[in-house]
Image 1 (cartoon, helix red, strand yellow):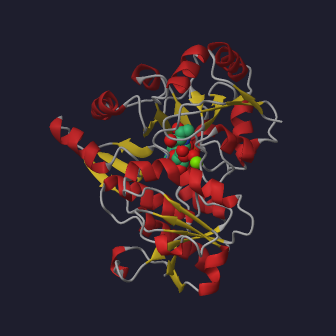
Image 2: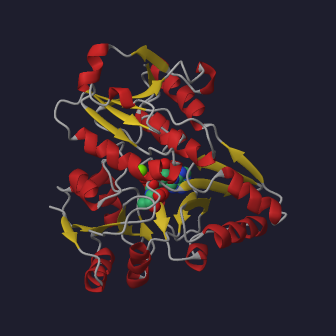
Length: 374
Ligand code: TXA
Ligand code: MG
């Protein structure tokens, strides 16, 4: 059974000892909670995959205190190092994961057998304290069951992982402020590829590259389109297992961050055009749907359904993307627990800025690309 502990210095010191001894510690970061294991303990790394029911083909991010610690784990060419220095000087500690060619000391299991390791220095005070007390790099995916919504509260972690033995969950009052996972980029040769959008957007990265006159190309993957192709391929060829699929594109599968309840994005023909979104599947909303549905609004667009739907909440009445990101996972996990809920209908977040794209990415995945016309 997992155990909750507070975030006092004494508790964190104990958690650091548990980590070194090969036990697991779930800790808050500025994005979401991580399920941590010492990078130097193979049994603990294995236990992370088992606890999350995560396929071994999906690599883990390694958390470190700072640039110097990260450099011990990688093997970079001169230009890659310059790029790494510029980006980490600007964005670390913070919500940017950088995938780099690894040094030979990094255990293969965290890289899913590949040659690249994902690294990030979190800014959250508790995460930093844990890293400094344990003096080990901490491998940590998000602390949820594989495929479920990421956790931003200690009780979210407990809900998913309570049956895991030798797991300590740090119960921390300070919020996971950002609320969605870090941006993931890969630096290789002269390219920076954006693999997962987040608070650190492609344009912020591009700005640093330009200002520092680095000869690097920033490539932004249009993930939902990619994912659409991937899932079509999966549908066409039922023999291709989810595992084989993940091997080719770790962490890129369409159904990710999903609530246990069927979820749809609201498509509103009055305000939206079909060519604005990757409409994978669209169906009409039936009147009978509403009394078994939870509406998740954005900017009070669907207030008229407040008393008809089984549940109504608003990610941000004033259309603040940061507020919406902070609330999204909490709202989805709260709705899952409401008796009688069969559907979640989320307002579409229009592409108002780069960060909205990151939020749309999470909503699109929660809904597995399904839209409902209202
Ligand atoms: O904000 C975050 O990044 C949180 C906190 C705990 O740091 N962590 C997190 O980890 O979201 P996870 O494992 O849930 O997501 C990491 C993503 C996955 O999609 C994984 O496939 C990808 O990053 N990733 C990690 N290492 C990689 C590597 N070496 N090569 C390719 N993709 C990698
Ligand atoms: Mg995750």
